[in-house]
Image 1 (tube, each protein chain N blue to C red):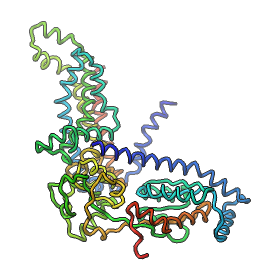
Image 2 (image 1 turned 45 degrees about the horizontal axis):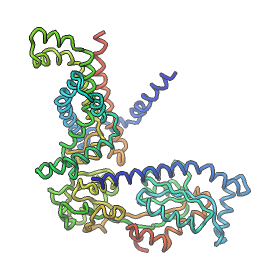
Image 3 (image 1 turned 90 degrees about the vertical axis):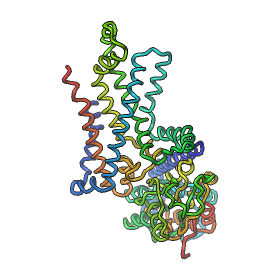
Image 4 (image 1 turned 180 degrees about the vertical axis):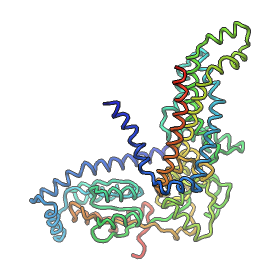
Length: 249
Length: 289
């Protein structure tokens, strides 16, 4: 029974959303100029943020999984913090760091670099919230894979770089892939930090979630239609991540 | 930066107060029913008739509970009016529920137990009028116009509203889809000003927060928002602001448990005393009166 209740709790809102969609106007609603601009911007920024997550997250996961630095547990907890932080809090924290009057932002302004109200700010916000997903997935994969292959390779005379490139990373490719996909999904859905930190301008900073939030006030049908688009993308992502799992067993 | 954090904190408090108001309103519903029933009759209609009679008697002492639904932008003003009303009528407990006008109209038409409704524009009030829930006619009690605000040190050197056309300045406005943005657009069209906006957000509080935190060089908000922000912003007049005057109507609702009490509160809002409180918060007097 509790399982059924749980399933109902998860499925009922999604089902209700689908039922509320105004199908007659759906194509027009999701292909309007503002919708397309928001969707394209979302895909573009989320892809960039995911790439950044991989570049920054792989070394972080390696440090967390393969070293025994003192205070590693604290470090891990801090890195994972954005995962559990309320989105608006993340936005305020980003603003404190990178805003025009922020800790780093003020110095950047002096150098003539202004990220306020730019697409860069959107990518920064998305990377901030999505990075932990990649680090967690990859660190888990690294720990599961274990040290043995690496030790064997090292004994056989492979240099540390070769071990990393030819042994460690290939083993954890599925973990890296699922981490990247989760990061992409999280970046795509990022809302609070973007709104607080990057602003909202069509084609520049107004991503799909921000467009939905704005449309909700004026045209609820458009908000529902665009929400469904995000649900579908999320479903594709989840299925994509989960699909390879049964093949292994 | 500390300024920005403080402002956000303040708006959260506002939201919490709104929620508390709604809770209070919900908690009050059975109480109102009790009051209605204690009129010596089991029918609320009969007790309503009795109350109308007392209001005719004039200087009758008022007592009981009054639930007021007020637009979020009236928060400070109505808290003041609430305590004045309670001080003048010791037997009365006023509960004010604050939220966006669209939400309040939706709640009232869905049957929320309110006695008085003060909304931030005529459109949302009209929804309640159309639902047949307003007793008599709504009265206009205040107006509000737009203004330009900058951070206190005016980092962008904004001297007049014409400077907002400068693409090098970071300017935040409300999105045209929401009322404050529609008003901004109306002023732009009337004056030929073309604001080079860097962000178009969904609520006027977001515009204010972006400016007070120093993230933007300038923003367009209502005069009352600028007054409320006090020293956190510097004000630059918006040329042509009279082209988009926002009107606030107040009305007694037909479902009011005690029409005399509802009438008395509306009278306070429209009185000289009420108008002084509104003026101090930056509201304009109702036009044509």
